[in-house]
Amino acid sequence: MTTVRTVDYHAAGEPFRIVDLTADPVAPAPGDTVAERCATAIGPGGSGTAPRRGALDDVRRLLVQEPRGHAGMYGGFVVPPDDDGAHFGVLFWHKDGYSTACGHGTMALGAWAVDTGLVPAPDDGDAQVRIDVPSGRVTATVHRDGGRTTGVTFRNVPARVGARKVPVATALGLAEVDIAHAGACYASLPARDLGLDVTRAGLPALVRAGQEVRAALATHPATWHPGGPLLSGVYGVILYEELADTPFGPHQRNVTVFADGQVDRSPCGSGTSARLALLAEDGRIGPGQDLLHESVAGTVFTGRIREGGVTEVTGTAYRTGEHAFTVDPYDVLGAGFSL
Image (spheres, rainbow, N blue to C red):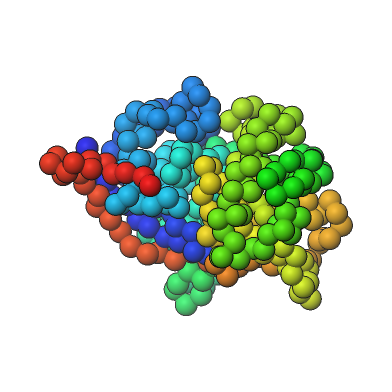
């Protein structure tokens, strides 16, 4: 394997490792569109968890497995856009495979595009970075002040509610789960319905509950997306708790459990979009209001809903470093391991 160079960011605490395949094609990403490239990367199984899918997946595994990564690592392969309307495309990945949406990653990519000069931006004001992702075209509006990036607003594809109060049996009791699509499919439920609190100490139990809910909904028709199997199936489970409303709208804290029991350190960007769709249907958020959305790490996104179910989520993204990863041919661990 050749050297793999990355630029790393975090958005509200969740890592995002960027590999620019358009500048340094360390592995092919076959397909004519970003969605096709994602489907090819996932492979025929469709679940995103097949053991091996080729050279591109070797790179993903190198970057997420220890000692170069960790179970919570997230990242993206920058690829060509679908057409000239976007600046670039991206394939989102995590420890267990690939995803069709990633709000925190979109924020990180917007900051990266501006910080590197790929997309011109003023010293004071905003710059729009248009990105093709597997679920559609999204926008990162990068906010600038005094020559530095101060925040990013992620505008997602339209969000919609799939189903309400779906009964799910868990080891902690029966839960009623709401399903919403926001670039990926999310199941939401109040943590206290299962006797849980959204705290760091409660993470093991929250993760187990999230895995149970995801498995129970594997074949539920409300998780199907009209865009086809790539966008269907529960990606993340959001266990949330209500906090006192702010003068601007609702206030919630959540843990989002995604893929094979991974925990989002941020409030989850596309998950925030899913929560906004549900809150709007309940009449709890409307024009001019914001959702203050906290993570278990104490970081915050603010979200709002626009016409047509389009959501916007604002947060921060900061660069954490650069890497040039290699594999020593004598290393018995090779590309790494997972615990």
